[in-house]
Image 1 (cartoon, rainbow, N blue to C red):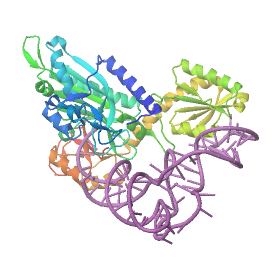
Image 2: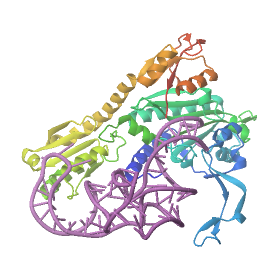
Image 3: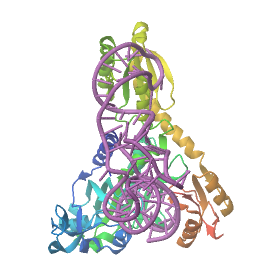
Length: 455
RNA sequence: CGGGGCAUAGCGCAGUUCGGUUAGCGCACUUGGUUUGGGACCAAGGGGUCGUAGGUUCGAAUCCUACUGCCCCGACCA
């Protein structure tokens, strides 16, 4: 996976904000190895099984010159590892193996650790940002003295993810828990935020897992409680990845290119001198630039004199820069500046004296507008259906989220998946209790769950 | 792993059917000039093992054989 600087800057903005939110809630960062001995990896059986089919494996530790092929290298058969190493697809195994040594008493708890790392999952098919063999993410791994505390932790992070998605990415999400089929391998419960892309398909954007005592038991992580009794610790893990960049792109972009929410845009405001940078214009541009920077706004003045304004307009639109300021001689004469917003493509002329507060407010408006627009789209793509026929037909013609009755069995879920490719995205946390009949089996159901085709 | 397709300049393609000048076009790049309020124009340039290897032929981007790589669809998945 290659992420170029402009794309990486988006990730950095996401990362910085999330990191801040984790730290505000008591978490600290640490780092664990990328290579995991196979014996450790397989200790928690369900988890190992869940990832087994997509693991890259290191078997040797040395290359040598190939005697039959000059100038080429070959794997040195003498350098076979005694035990193979797994390239981490996730770090529960190595981390719980380490936590065993770190935790003795309830006084060592809770342990609230996050790591920013790369992981590898050897998928059969990749998709830019949404499913890459290697990706960047954060993975939180926490240990607690009680079940309730662990569940609360998983829910707290679930809230943080939802808040981040909606407030920063301007991407509305549905909060819920996963069905058994869709749950993280090794978890007792998985909480998820589910977003809707503009093509009507759902995107799992972040998951937070309540792991019960599964990993504690697999890695024998025990502690003495305040009554001096030994018990297994309770655990959570949670992560979001560079997949969020894909979600961001697919939530807001249009035919002219990216549309970035101001809170995550690497460049929030670009000033384009028209027709080209000259000293009068640059002087004014610099003045506006520093005034905006004082407000913490990320501004760029485009001083490139080899490209014409029209070209630059198109380029910054493609890059999703939220606000573009066009400043030319005519503006200077009239004491105005042209303000163009990316989200609606509106252009207006604003008095130079007023441009700084205007732009500052406009960035907030754009952030709000993007969220509201995405939410409106999502609301118009939520269908409540009661029959399987209607489900199938709307799924094909319209897509989106479907609130349907389900009998709660994996068998039904599997059948629906086989027949329609739609899966249960989540059982919403705010599910209304409502008795009905499963749209597939006709068996009784106590509330509607969310179906969709997903990435 | 199954089914389809593609491989010619940095990118996108034509040329291949039916072998025959020096392999071409658009974009990009370099230089010079003129331009400049929505992706400028003119001129002159640079850049190619036509995926790889072998074969047929007086002659191969073009025909034949094998191989390699990539893309799309399906099974797996955050």
